[in-house]
Amino acid sequence: MDKLLFLTNELINPNLYKQMHIPLSLISYGITKGKMYTHHGDRHKTFITLPVNKVWGNDVIYGALFLCKDFDFYSRILDAYHVCSMTTMYRNHKLDLHHRGVVNVSPIHFDTLDDLARLRYREGNIINAETYLGNTQHPKISQRFKNPSYRLLSGIHGEGFKQLFWEVENEGN
Image 1: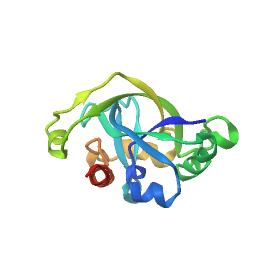
Image 2 (image 1 turned 120 degrees about the horizontal axis):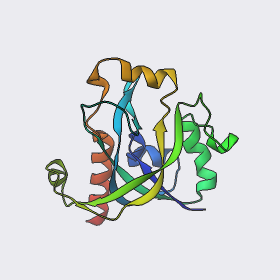
Image 3 (image 1 turned 180 degrees about the horizontal axis):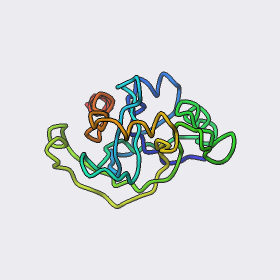
Image 4 (image 1 turned 90 degrees about the horizontal axis):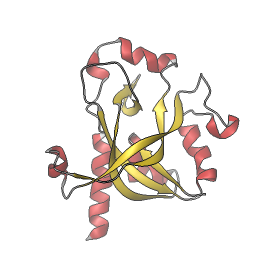
């Protein structure tokens, strides 16, 4: 079965998901509510959480909405990458690093990265999509909330997002 997948981490980089042979087709860029943090020991890997009681930092997460063909098969690869047991146990386990869940995503449309940086984008109607969320009960995730705020990011995985945007632009030309 095909499913909508909202990615916000390093997997939005087309080079990475193609290297993993995951058949993702970009539908739209999108936003959701939450906070974005870096993983312990690797500032290039990020995770998001939904309502976190932190009053500072961005509460909008930018990502990409993909259609994943044959999600029942490829979810095993995605779950393994995110250390999530949903495909094997049919539920999220308390020791998983990430949980797979459904979030509300607003598709966004913009012409240039400069427009996005200046928040000049148009929002579409809210839709539901699968995504991976940091498990706030996991010790490696929960420790990110207790320490200084430099681990709280601006809500966008810049390198992957730019790479995806440039690839889409190059395909259009």
